[in-house]
Amino acid sequence: MAKLSIQEVWKSFGTHDVLKGISLDIEAGQMVCLIGASGSGKSTLLRCLNLLEPVDDGAILLDGADITDPELDPQPIRQRIGMVFQSFNLFPHMTALENVLLAPRRIHRKSREALLPGVKALFTRFGLADRMGHYPDQLSGGQQQRVAIIRALAMQPEVMLFDEVTSALDPALVGEVLDVLRALKAEGMTMVIATHEMAFARDAADKVCFLYEGRILEEGPPAEIFSAPRDERTRAFLARVL
Amino acid sequence: MTGEMTEPGGPERAARPPSRRALREARMRRRAMAIATLSTAVVVALIVILVPMAPGWERVQRSFFNGEVFAKTFPGLLQAFLTDIMIFAWCAPMIAVLGLLIALARDARSPALFPLRLFGTIYNDAFRGVPVILVIYLVGFGIPGLGLPRPWNSPYIWGTVAVVLTYSAYVAEVYRTGIESIHESQRAAATSLGLSHWDVMRYVVLPQAIRRVIPANMNLLIALQKDVALLSFIGPVEVLRQAGVYKSLLANFTPYLGAALIFLAVTVPATRWVDRLIARQNAARS
Ligand SMILES: Nc1ncnc2c1ncn2[C@@H]1O[C@H](COP(=O)(O)OP(=O)(O)O)[C@@H](O)[C@H]1O
Ligand SMILES: [Mg+2]
Image (cartoon, rainbow over all chains, first blue to last red):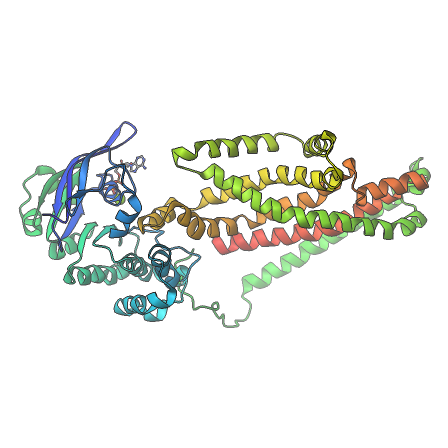
C-alpha cells in the first residue's frame, strides 16, 4: 500500500479549475518531485495534501485512510505531514529555537526541557547549532529555510512537503538546502517536492511528475522523463528549463 | 525584514570621517534652520505688534489672558486634571482588552461563529458612526435614569462605560488592520504545523500584529486623553468642568486657557513621541 495515495483530486478557485483529476501514488521512503511551469498547480496540490485547501472531489489516502473527509479534524493529520514553503516561513518575532519549539510545546504538551535535547540534535545535524538564539532576520535565506525544515521535522512527521523551498534563495545558498533534502531521503523520509531545480530532480528523485495545467501529463523515473519524454509539452518544458 | 546578516546586539559601525556629501547636507540643514528661525521670528513679531492694535484687544486681554486669574485658578485646574488622568488610567486598559476581543470576534472564520462576527461588525459600525458625546449622554444619563441605587448611578461608572464602548470600536479597527497586515504565509506555516486556529492567532499573528499597530493605538490614546474631558457634561468635576466653575465664579475666561495649556502640555509631547515611534518603525521595516 502506498504511503500517500492521491486519487482523482479536483480543485477549483471560483470557475478556474486548478487541479483536474490528479492521481499519484507515493511509496514510503520515496522522493517524488513535481515539475511544471509556474501556475500548473504544484503549490495547490501540496496545499491540498496538507489540508490547507479543501479538495472539491477525489480522495487523498494516508496509510490507506482518506484524510479529505470533512468530518475529520485536520489538526492531527497536519501534524503527520510537515510542510515548508517558498518564503515567509519563519515567525520573525521568535528566535530560531522558539520557532522550532512552538508546535511541539503546544501540541505535544511537552516542556522546553524535555524537548531541548532532541531539538538541539536537529540543529546540530543541520549545522545550525550556533544559530539557535538568532532571529530570522539575523539568518541568511538558506539558514532560514533549514530552520523551517528543522521546525517541521521537530513534529516528527511521516511525510514532508516542500514547495519550491529554494526558489527565493541566492543561487549560492541553494546547495545547502538541497543537501538537507538529500540527507532526509537517505534517512528514509517520504517526500513530495515541487521544484525548479531540474538537476536536483534528475539525480535525487525516485519519481518525477510533470504537471501541466492541473494534470499530470507524465510521470516516471527521472532518467525516463528527462532523457526520453513522451509528451510534446513535456519536451517543450524541459527544453525551456534545461 | 532584511536579508542582511547581523550579529545579535546590532552591527558595530566603524567611525569614519564624514563624507563630502554628509558635510554638504549638514550645511544645507543649517541654512534651512536659519531661514525657518528668521521667518518664525517675523511672524511672531507681527502678531505681537499688530494684534494689540485691534480695537477689542483690551477687553479680550482682560477676559482671556488675565494673569491674576490664571495664577489663582491654575493650581485648582491641575488638581482637577488628576481626575482626568484617573479616568484615563482605568479606561485605557479596558479599551485595549475590549478592542482586542471585538477584533478577534470580527476575525472569527468558522461558520458556527458567524453571529459573533456579525456582532463585531455591527458594534464597530454603530460606535464609530456616532459622536462620542452622544454616547456619553445616552449612556451617562439614560442608564442611571433607570433609577439605579446609589453606587450604581455614578456618572463615573457610566461615563467610563460610554468612553470604553466608543473607543473599543476604534481600537478594534486598528487591531484588525494589524491582523490583516500579517502575511497569509505566516498563518499557513503555523497551520501546517498542526496548531489550532486559536494558537495560530495567539502565538503567531497577534504578537506581530499588535506590535505593528502600536503607533496607531497611541494616537487613539492621545485622542482619548482629550475626550475624557467630555465626561464633564454628565457630572464628574474634571479639568474642563472645574474651568467652567471658575469662569462663572470669576466672570473670566482665563481658566479655559489654563485648561487648554494643561492638555497641550500632555498631548504635544505625546504626539511627538508617537511620531518618532512611527518614524523608527518605518525605518526598521525598509
Ligand atoms: N487562493 C487562490 N485563489 C485563486 N486562485 C488561485 C489560488 N491559489 C492558486 N490559484 C491559481 O491556481 C493556479 C495554480 O497555482 P499554483 O498551484 O500556485 O501553481 P504553481 O505552484 O505550479 O505555480 C494559478 O493559476 C493560480 O493563479
Ligand atoms: Mg507555486
